[in-house]
Length: 367
Ligand code: SF4
Image (cartoon, rainbow, N blue to C red):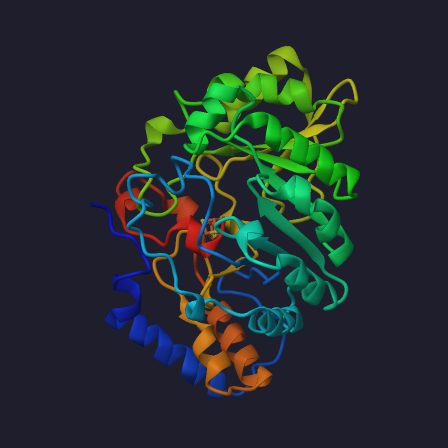
């Protein structure tokens, strides 16, 4: 059976203890001056916060049913960061240069009273506050999320074909409900909605062009994501990847495209717009065109560990600092020290061999 982090090994390992010692030492240290950048000169700009490791879908590439079955142990409630802890950490991250916060999971809308957390984070001031969801609960919650201060929303949708979509989410959830949720989000003022489609060879590549056609002219932005080796449970192989170039060619043949400039340095999606003015799509080519060079993203797990890469094997325990009485300055020092020694560039060095190395699961760390 594949290794699942973090429930067994990461917390007990000597690597874990070494990381914890590092965080504590950093928290005591004097704060270095100057702009915060990692070993490759990348600033810290984005923080993705996983608010739950639970999900109501069992997508085959993320939380496959065989692993996440009735016997799977999710994190107990006491392990989760509270809303107050999340907000305090977020404020410290903002002080370190973060300008964008994204709530993820698991499925973030499963976290009870998530609107209250949104409201607390929105009060931090001038930040881009977004959320990624599978859409199952979005139609009901979109107005209250907007009222709480959410800026935008990203919805995961892997196919417009109902049978394919039900097979991929593996809980028989109908595509029509996700489409209704996207409409509800737009109506609530969370537009433009970004629609993320993970493309897996032999599974949903036939949905590439229909997805483009459906959302063209709607104002929403479909983003095609190359299938990645996240976690240790999805059995990734290079043959499963539909390369970005192939995705663009397939759409361009029917709906002519032209490249568009990035909105900002470090934008994950490569932008393409329809030549007839019908809007744009994005391509996230993290396998065939790695974008580590401009990666400014950190991730905070459900239980308060800081990960500096989606493909990390271990995180830094910030919750321990929150709960041992450390002050904001000490926690800021620790975050800065962690970021300054960051050298991650997994997508630049990925092979089928690295894909087999156990990594944290995406449902725990956030996508
Ligand atoms: S592999 Fe890691 S460093 Fe590279 S872009 Fe992804 S998250 Fe950033």
